[in-house]
Amino acid sequence: AQTVTQSQPEMSVQEAETVTLSCTYDTSENNYYLFWYKQPPSRQMILVIRQEAYKQQNATENRFSVNFQKAAKSFSLKISDSQLGDTAMYFCAFMKPSNAGGTSYGKLTFGQGTILTVHP
Amino acid sequence: EAGVTQSPTHLIKTRGQQVTLRCSPISGHTSVYWYQQALGLGLQFLLWYDEGEERNRGNFPPRFSGRQFPNYSSELNVNALELEDSALYLCASSSDRIPGNTIYFGEGSWLTVV
Image: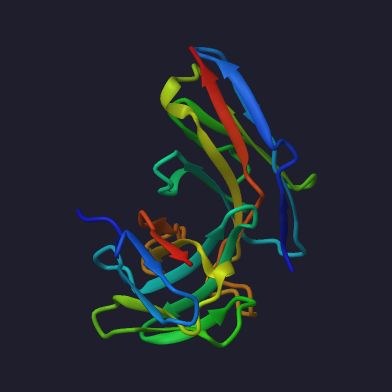
């Protein structure tokens, strides 16, 4: 079974600064997807960024980028130029492709979440 | 394009009652997922439906059930409600026809059991 660990329950950052959220995972699979989701106080889960394990290049989406270290099973999220609207709970998630077979495919396994607060 | 929509947004039920939550996936998505987010317990996978069939189930008792309709919308039913069923229930959808299998979430249904 896959596990996802976020070791930082809470983080804080000043507006306009950079912050990195950590995530590690455990799997025996070679092909999989990794995601970062954001959950603001409204509680809707919003996709921030995704990474395919077969791609060596780190994914980027505007101010959001990841540092994907496959051998180390590490998937950290860097938020540059932090904004007040970035304040939210951030979840790291793992998923096997839905055509991979087995009982865990097609579902996300989430970490415990990191509460990020951006201060003005 | 409309996102994943869920109803109702909030509801209060009494212990022992039954509840039905509804979800409409993004147009073109055939897979629907249900997750439970209880306070202090994180996000727990409940059910996955694809093309009308249950494909995978999380570690929940049988009183949690659901179904997917021909239009790919889905219902989650919870029977014999218990206090610990109080949670945010999130529905999500995806399509295997779209590369990457990204799962998109709705805004959730808040269930309070008293």
